[in-house]
Image (cartoon, rainbow over all chains, first blue to last red; front, side):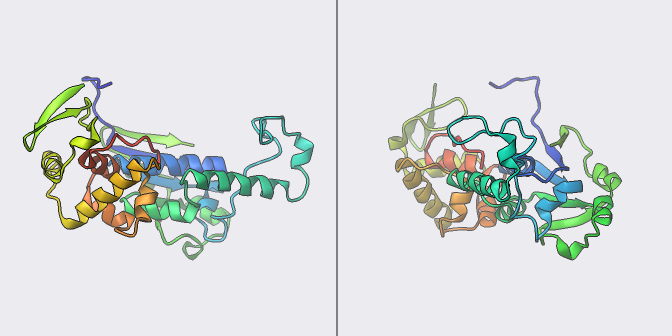
Length: 167
Length: 103
Protein backbone atom coordinates (compact mmCIF):
# COMPACT_ATOMS: atom_id res chain seq x y z
CA UNK A 1 0.00 0.00 0.00
CA UNK A 2 2.80 2.37 0.88
CA UNK A 3 4.25 4.30 -2.02
CA UNK A 4 7.71 5.63 -1.34
CA UNK A 5 7.27 8.50 -3.81
CA UNK A 6 4.24 9.84 -2.00
CA UNK A 7 4.34 12.19 0.92
CA UNK A 8 1.37 12.32 3.28
CA UNK A 9 -1.41 14.86 3.00
CA UNK A 10 -0.89 17.64 5.50
CA UNK A 11 -3.87 19.91 5.12
CA UNK A 12 -7.33 19.72 3.57
CA UNK A 13 -9.56 22.72 2.93
CA UNK A 14 -13.14 21.78 2.10
CA UNK A 15 -15.68 24.16 0.60
CA UNK A 16 -19.38 23.36 1.02
CA UNK A 17 -21.77 25.41 -1.10
CA UNK A 18 -24.92 23.32 -0.92
CA UNK A 19 -27.35 22.67 1.89
CA UNK A 20 -28.81 19.24 1.27
CA UNK A 21 -28.12 16.38 3.68
CA UNK A 22 -25.80 14.61 1.24
CA UNK A 23 -23.76 17.69 0.38
CA UNK A 24 -23.33 18.77 3.97
CA UNK A 25 -22.54 15.28 5.21
CA UNK A 26 -20.00 14.74 2.46
CA UNK A 27 -18.21 17.80 3.83
CA UNK A 28 -18.57 16.78 7.47
CA UNK A 29 -17.50 13.16 6.97
CA UNK A 30 -14.47 14.17 4.91
CA UNK A 31 -13.62 16.94 7.36
CA UNK A 32 -13.94 14.76 10.43
CA UNK A 33 -12.10 11.95 8.65
CA UNK A 34 -9.18 14.27 8.01
CA UNK A 35 -9.14 15.43 11.65
CA UNK A 36 -9.12 11.78 12.75
CA UNK A 37 -6.02 11.17 10.63
CA UNK A 38 -4.21 14.08 12.19
CA UNK A 39 -4.52 16.18 9.02
CA UNK A 40 -5.02 19.92 9.48
CA UNK A 41 -8.61 20.63 8.47
CA UNK A 42 -10.45 23.80 7.47
CA UNK A 43 -14.09 23.89 6.36
CA UNK A 44 -15.58 26.85 4.50
CA UNK A 45 -19.37 27.10 4.22
CA UNK A 46 -20.90 29.34 1.59
CA UNK A 47 -24.21 29.89 -0.23
CA UNK A 48 -26.78 27.26 0.79
CA UNK A 49 -24.03 25.39 2.61
CA UNK A 50 -24.42 28.07 5.30
CA UNK A 51 -27.52 26.18 6.48
CA UNK A 52 -25.15 23.59 7.94
CA UNK A 53 -23.72 26.12 10.39
CA UNK A 54 -26.81 28.28 10.94
CA UNK A 55 -28.28 27.43 14.35
CA UNK A 56 -31.87 27.56 13.13
CA UNK A 57 -31.31 25.32 10.12
CA UNK A 58 -28.45 22.96 10.90
CA UNK A 59 -30.55 20.13 12.30
CA UNK A 60 -33.35 20.51 9.77
CA UNK A 61 -31.52 19.69 6.57
CA UNK A 62 -33.39 17.90 3.80
CA UNK A 63 -32.53 15.77 0.87
CA UNK A 64 -34.33 16.54 -2.40
CA UNK A 65 -37.13 14.13 -3.28
CA UNK A 66 -37.80 15.95 -6.57
CA UNK A 67 -35.17 16.14 -9.29
CA UNK A 68 -33.07 13.49 -7.60
CA UNK A 69 -32.73 10.55 -9.99
CA UNK A 70 -30.94 8.42 -7.41
CA UNK A 71 -33.94 8.61 -5.07
CA UNK A 72 -35.44 5.16 -4.45
CA UNK A 73 -38.03 3.58 -2.19
CA UNK A 74 -36.76 1.43 0.67
CA UNK A 75 -36.14 -1.88 -1.07
CA UNK A 76 -34.89 -0.26 -4.26
CA UNK A 77 -38.04 0.42 -6.29
CA UNK A 78 -38.04 3.70 -8.24
CA UNK A 79 -39.34 6.72 -6.38
CA UNK A 80 -41.86 8.59 -8.55
CA UNK A 81 -41.01 12.31 -8.68
CA UNK A 82 -44.69 13.17 -8.34
CA UNK A 83 -44.67 11.51 -4.91
CA UNK A 84 -41.77 13.68 -3.87
CA UNK A 85 -43.89 16.75 -4.50
CA UNK A 86 -46.50 15.83 -1.90
CA UNK A 87 -46.38 17.85 1.32
CA UNK A 88 -44.41 16.14 4.05
CA UNK A 89 -42.74 13.57 1.82
CA UNK A 90 -39.41 15.34 1.65
CA UNK A 91 -39.41 15.85 5.43
CA UNK A 92 -40.32 12.20 5.98
CA UNK A 93 -37.64 10.90 3.64
CA UNK A 94 -35.07 13.21 5.22
CA UNK A 95 -35.98 12.10 8.73
CA UNK A 96 -35.62 8.50 7.63
CA UNK A 97 -32.20 9.16 6.16
CA UNK A 98 -31.04 10.81 9.38
CA UNK A 99 -32.33 7.82 11.35
CA UNK A 100 -30.46 5.37 9.16
CA UNK A 101 -27.29 7.44 9.51
CA UNK A 102 -27.65 7.53 13.28
CA UNK A 103 -27.60 3.72 13.30
CA UNK A 104 -24.13 3.93 11.76
CA UNK A 105 -23.08 6.34 14.51
CA UNK A 106 -23.19 9.33 12.16
CA UNK A 107 -24.13 12.23 14.44
CA UNK A 108 -26.51 15.12 13.81
CA UNK A 109 -24.91 18.25 12.33
CA UNK A 110 -24.38 20.14 15.59
CA UNK A 111 -22.70 17.15 17.24
CA UNK A 112 -20.61 16.56 14.14
CA UNK A 113 -19.31 20.15 14.34
CA UNK A 114 -18.53 19.49 18.04
CA UNK A 115 -16.48 16.46 17.05
CA UNK A 116 -14.59 18.24 14.29
CA UNK A 117 -13.67 21.24 16.41
CA UNK A 118 -12.83 19.04 19.42
CA UNK A 119 -10.17 17.46 17.25
CA UNK A 120 -8.79 20.82 16.14
CA UNK A 121 -10.68 21.26 12.85
CA UNK A 122 -11.71 24.81 11.99
CA UNK A 123 -15.04 26.03 10.63
CA UNK A 124 -15.47 29.24 8.62
CA UNK A 125 -18.39 31.07 7.03
CA UNK A 126 -18.38 33.01 3.77
CA UNK A 127 -18.84 36.75 4.23
CA UNK A 128 -20.40 37.35 0.81
CA UNK A 129 -23.05 34.66 1.27
CA UNK A 130 -23.76 35.90 4.81
CA UNK A 131 -24.43 39.40 3.43
CA UNK A 132 -26.60 37.93 0.71
CA UNK A 133 -28.74 35.91 3.12
CA UNK A 134 -28.75 38.75 5.71
CA UNK A 135 -27.09 36.55 8.30
CA UNK A 136 -25.10 37.79 11.29
CA UNK A 137 -22.40 35.95 13.20
CA UNK A 138 -24.82 35.36 16.11
CA UNK A 139 -27.06 33.30 13.82
CA UNK A 140 -24.22 30.84 13.35
CA UNK A 141 -23.05 27.93 15.48
CA UNK A 142 -20.54 28.86 18.18
CA UNK A 143 -18.13 26.49 16.45
CA UNK A 144 -17.70 28.94 13.57
CA UNK A 145 -14.29 30.44 14.11
CA UNK A 146 -14.63 33.39 11.78
CA UNK A 147 -16.45 34.97 8.85
CA UNK A 148 -14.06 35.25 5.92
CA UNK A 149 -13.76 36.45 2.36
CA UNK A 150 -12.71 33.79 -0.10
CA UNK A 151 -9.37 35.57 -0.33
CA UNK A 152 -8.84 35.17 3.42
CA UNK A 153 -9.71 31.50 3.10
CA UNK A 154 -7.25 30.95 0.26
CA UNK A 155 -4.69 32.64 2.45
CA UNK A 156 -5.10 29.75 4.90
CA UNK A 157 -4.79 27.07 2.23
CA UNK A 158 -1.11 27.43 1.47
CA UNK A 159 1.69 25.02 2.20
CA UNK A 160 2.87 21.82 0.58
CA UNK A 161 0.61 18.78 0.47
CA UNK A 162 -2.53 20.86 0.87
CA UNK A 163 -5.71 20.04 -1.02
CA UNK A 164 -8.80 22.13 -1.63
CA UNK A 165 -11.95 20.08 -2.07
CA UNK A 166 -15.26 21.46 -3.31
CA UNK A 167 -18.30 19.39 -2.44
CA UNK B 1 2.67 -10.50 8.21
CA UNK B 2 5.51 -9.62 10.53
CA UNK B 3 6.63 -10.10 14.07
CA UNK B 4 7.83 -7.52 16.49
CA UNK B 5 9.42 -8.03 19.88
CA UNK B 6 7.89 -5.80 22.49
CA UNK B 7 8.17 -6.23 26.25
CA UNK B 8 9.70 -9.67 25.69
CA UNK B 9 6.80 -10.93 23.60
CA UNK B 10 7.12 -11.84 19.92
CA UNK B 11 4.05 -10.06 18.63
CA UNK B 12 2.31 -11.14 15.47
CA UNK B 13 1.59 -7.81 13.75
CA UNK B 14 0.36 -6.45 10.42
CA UNK B 15 2.60 -4.34 8.19
CA UNK B 16 1.16 -1.25 9.81
CA UNK B 17 1.90 -2.58 13.28
CA UNK B 18 -1.55 -3.68 14.41
CA UNK B 19 -1.61 -6.85 16.48
CA UNK B 20 -3.13 -9.87 14.75
CA UNK B 21 -3.59 -11.84 17.95
CA UNK B 22 -5.39 -9.82 20.58
CA UNK B 23 -4.65 -12.47 23.21
CA UNK B 24 -0.94 -11.56 23.10
CA UNK B 25 -1.81 -8.20 24.56
CA UNK B 26 -0.67 -7.26 28.05
CA UNK B 27 -0.32 -3.94 29.83
CA UNK B 28 3.42 -4.12 29.26
CA UNK B 29 2.93 -4.70 25.55
CA UNK B 30 0.61 -1.68 25.47
CA UNK B 31 3.24 0.43 27.18
CA UNK B 32 5.84 -0.79 24.69
CA UNK B 33 3.76 0.06 21.63
CA UNK B 34 2.84 3.40 23.17
CA UNK B 35 6.51 4.19 23.68
CA UNK B 36 7.12 3.56 19.97
CA UNK B 37 4.34 6.05 19.29
CA UNK B 38 5.95 8.52 21.66
CA UNK B 39 3.35 8.14 24.40
CA UNK B 40 3.61 7.51 28.13
CA UNK B 41 0.45 5.70 29.28
CA UNK B 42 -1.52 7.00 32.27
CA UNK B 43 -4.44 5.45 34.17
CA UNK B 44 -6.79 7.35 31.88
CA UNK B 45 -5.17 5.73 28.84
CA UNK B 46 -5.58 2.28 30.37
CA UNK B 47 -9.20 2.98 31.21
CA UNK B 48 -9.83 3.87 27.58
CA UNK B 49 -7.83 0.90 26.32
CA UNK B 50 -10.01 -1.38 28.40
CA UNK B 51 -13.12 0.26 26.98
CA UNK B 52 -11.82 -0.18 23.41
CA UNK B 53 -10.87 -3.83 23.98
CA UNK B 54 -14.28 -4.63 25.44
CA UNK B 55 -16.08 -2.79 22.68
CA UNK B 56 -14.17 -4.63 19.97
CA UNK B 57 -14.56 -7.97 21.76
CA UNK B 58 -18.32 -7.51 21.84
CA UNK B 59 -18.24 -7.00 18.08
CA UNK B 60 -19.50 -3.43 18.15
CA UNK B 61 -18.19 -0.82 15.75
CA UNK B 62 -15.67 1.56 17.19
CA UNK B 63 -16.02 5.25 16.34
CA UNK B 64 -14.73 8.50 17.76
CA UNK B 65 -18.33 9.27 18.64
CA UNK B 66 -18.68 6.10 20.71
CA UNK B 67 -15.53 7.00 22.62
CA UNK B 68 -16.97 10.43 23.31
CA UNK B 69 -19.98 8.68 24.80
CA UNK B 70 -17.92 6.20 26.83
CA UNK B 71 -18.14 8.38 29.92
CA UNK B 72 -14.35 8.13 30.32
CA UNK B 73 -13.28 11.10 28.22
CA UNK B 74 -14.88 13.58 25.89
CA UNK B 75 -13.66 13.79 22.31
CA UNK B 76 -11.37 16.73 22.99
CA UNK B 77 -9.63 14.83 25.79
CA UNK B 78 -9.36 11.77 23.55
CA UNK B 79 -7.44 13.81 20.98
CA UNK B 80 -5.19 15.06 23.78
CA UNK B 81 -4.52 11.57 25.13
CA UNK B 82 -3.63 10.16 21.72
CA UNK B 83 -2.45 13.17 19.69
CA UNK B 84 -2.45 13.03 15.90
CA UNK B 85 -4.57 10.13 14.75
CA UNK B 86 -6.27 9.11 18.02
CA UNK B 87 -8.44 6.21 16.91
CA UNK B 88 -5.59 4.57 15.00
CA UNK B 89 -3.08 5.06 17.79
CA UNK B 90 -5.48 3.94 20.50
CA UNK B 91 -6.48 0.77 18.67
CA UNK B 92 -2.87 -0.07 17.89
CA UNK B 93 -1.95 0.25 21.55
CA UNK B 94 -5.07 -1.68 22.58
CA UNK B 95 -4.01 -4.66 20.48
CA UNK B 96 -7.16 -4.71 18.36
CA UNK B 97 -7.48 -4.56 14.56
CA UNK B 98 -7.20 -1.27 12.68
CA UNK B 99 -10.62 0.38 12.86
CA UNK B 100 -12.69 0.23 9.70
CA UNK B 101 -14.62 3.33 10.65
CA UNK B 102 -15.04 6.68 8.91
CA UNK B 103 -16.58 8.40 11.91
